[in-house]
Image 1 (cartoon, one colour):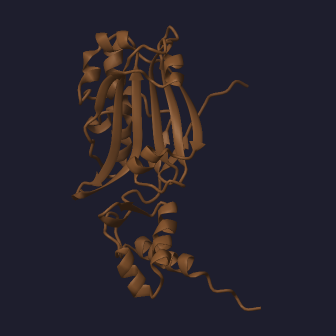
Image 2 (cartoon, helix red, strand yellow):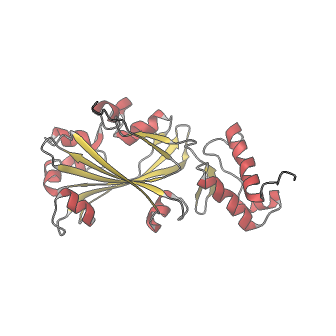
Image 3 (tube, helix red, strand yellow):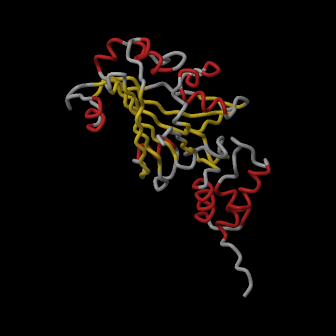
Length: 264
């Protein structure tokens, strides 16, 4: 029995992937439009869309509504080392403003932050419970959409994370820089430490789930593509949780690493 020829979608997707690997289509470059791909390959419009959908699911391309399809700026995955990323030296490495900025700089990319949504709001019930707040209490929210660009071209950006941090109101009152757009070198953790609320212990819970409609739109991913949600909690020496951050990340863009010392 002869070897079966791959279907049109995986075959064409593999051809484009090979061109991305060879640098014919470098990171951030625009790919042919769906109609152009359809005409070039002699395929149906939906088949052309499915080709890009498969490449998107592989983390090789991303789409922007009304603008087209581009080669991903992050070919491979961002390493999120949960063991060391929150150390003060790591958070401010090279002038970085927080752990995420440092991670992106190590890839030779640029974090191009959009304005942070800063407000006093009622947090989700689970966050309120973690912070020990009454359900009607308003906490300080810092909601971020986090795109990256290339240093030689900031016209094309790719969102690789959504992050919403919550802080108890009494701590926010004592740390006014938390309500500023730029919290300074080292980010909010450094400002909390300066205010007497140093986080000496961290706790994270990780869930793989489907994105909400708003999350899929914010990340620019298909609604059926899974995301990683990390519930990050920062605790003081007294055991108080002074920050809860919900990180929502495309599964195709991130690799998580942790290391522990265990007893013999």
